[in-house]
Image (cartoon, rainbow, N blue to C red; front, top):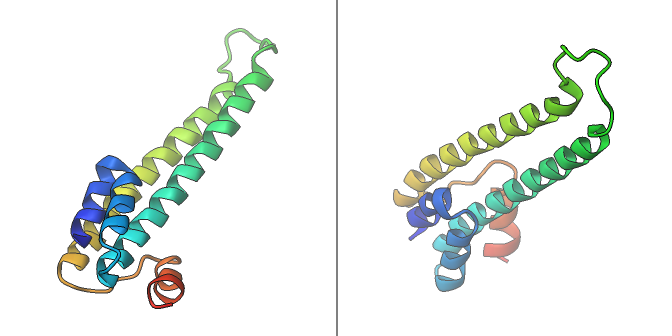
Length: 128
């Protein structure tokens, strides 16, 4: 079940870890891994939404200002799009890597902790 909480998070986002956390509350091991995956997906979602808000604010700020030279690339308009797209792709690669690595560790029965959030979840939520 802990393996599935990680792997299904690739396809279902935060819904799969949330369902596994709610269904398997009696198992500390599954709860721990599901909470780690859930925390990662919530952080990833919030970062992507902040990026989208910045992108749309940038679009609205630069929409009415014509370029001084019609032949130049409007970097002020499309630059943030490139940055946000790269951020999304890097997030997707991190998501895939975390799911596979920690899914395999969970399948082996390891209490493997995500960087930065795993120890906090283990201390404060699972073994409270």
